[in-house]
Length: 304
Image (cartoon, rainbow, N blue to C red; front, side):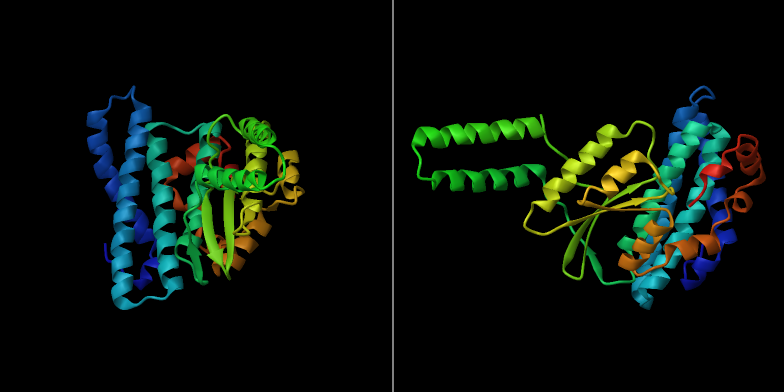
């Protein structure tokens, strides 16, 4: 497989390459796992194909560094490699364990998130990733600040200790353990820090997740670094949970075409235009997969 700038236009060559690799992998996988172990076969083929994709991207990054590719040339090549890998992963998984609607709709959502993040990992704009804070660090910092404030109050030592005990009770109400402040993406742009959560869509029972996102965003809003919290949703939503977050005043929530507009605004790359130009699921899948997805009315979930 020759890696050069033109690989972004070599969809059919990449699909053939991944399919040849998948055939090799499946031959071995089927000797390792019996027909009754379809879930293990599915997991193994996904892992093997992802490793192949990672190897291609590693080679590409080395080549792009030597030849001084532009950021856009690099990104478009990686998008095409990733998309072709996704097509063949879905085909291969379907061949060992045919998709039903629940598995397929969930899988499509799982794949959309990391695909979008490629625009931020290899951005056209001048953005940089950062490591999110740990909840334990945030809690300690806030606790120390409150303790210092209480210690300087003109009240008795007993009253100071009582206030600190009440403060500890508040923390116990917020969480019985550690709150995960790490979301899907964390980047800085124009001296502003952003934390991002990607979501395929909202199901019928998202109350717990919605409350978690509200809590996490509230914590970020109260930190000194002045974070902004962004929510990007793949589906065109008119869901009560989405609207709760959108109207919260602490999440900037976007869905469907608006989400793509914001991805373009921050990363500098029009991902929506790329998907409309390059993605054609029904044609790019092999005939067997397209037939299965059509017969089971699953193509409707492939709206990226």
